[in-house]
Length: 386
Figure 1 (cartoon, rainbow, N blue to C red):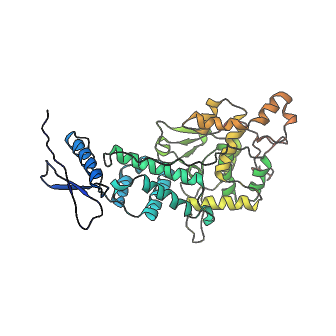
Figure 2 (cartoon, rainbow, N blue to C red; figure 1 turned 120 degrees about the vertical axis):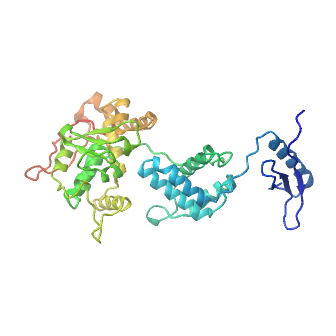
Figure 3 (cartoon, rainbow, N blue to C red; figure 1 turned 30 degrees about the vertical axis):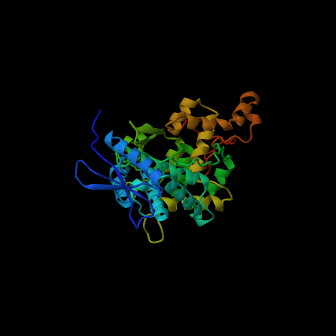
């Protein structure tokens, strides 16, 4: 029988509401304490026996006493540099919200109750545009990022295990086709060629807003760039955090719109604020949404990308669409096949019986200012993009 190395005893302190478990650390020789979690002597005796067993069998994990703000600094320095810029921004936003709601607790004290309080606090924060409360889908995303954060802490042996997270039910809507006339109305309200070309990157290339804003003229390893020689937009592995470079075939109308833009600096698109300085991503997003509202439609760069995927879902198989959309999982891609009724109808009845298909008409001025769109609403280049 193995001789016990550590003995745990129960101690009562007049200034504490619960009993305390104490023992001598064999490595440091210092006395250590842990709350028994109860004032009942019988229950505390059970906790004492359990702790003594864990200590003598090397399975006790002492909760981390690192303050949350210090842990946050570690996480931002060691983990976040390895993720995409957009992911980094959302995660930093979540970390700030956690501090705002939960304060600066010890990392080891973050448990299921802390997660529940954080969830409740998120519901009280302002939603989009400062109106209403935060939507369930946004709360679900914030909790996913927090789960990733605490899982990293577990893998770094900072905490013994990741707390359990509540299940948040959020309505999941399948991507919807965008009527061509809706995009036309939005494009018609574009104040300049810069905005027109920017919208076309979503409609004809399926670029995300951040990807379009980062687009550059010349080849580089840090940002997407336009390769006119090969008719493609290249997204370097360093930018997308993938194992290899990704690329997007360059639609002829999009190419024409890009070539017409002036080249002031290395960036393709320039959105300037009132002070003459480039505006941030969130402000560009707000401008696009305001432009759509002005046109009487509900569109954004995100919905333009989804519309792009819906357009090609009726034309190409899932493995091709997955590559066009650059989805990490084909399960995400399959959601785009929930809305191919028009493609099914056209397959049997022919294109003349289909008047509502999201088939990609676009507005790009030709040499004489006319639209380069045929009467059926199809672009001149029906090549798969992104």
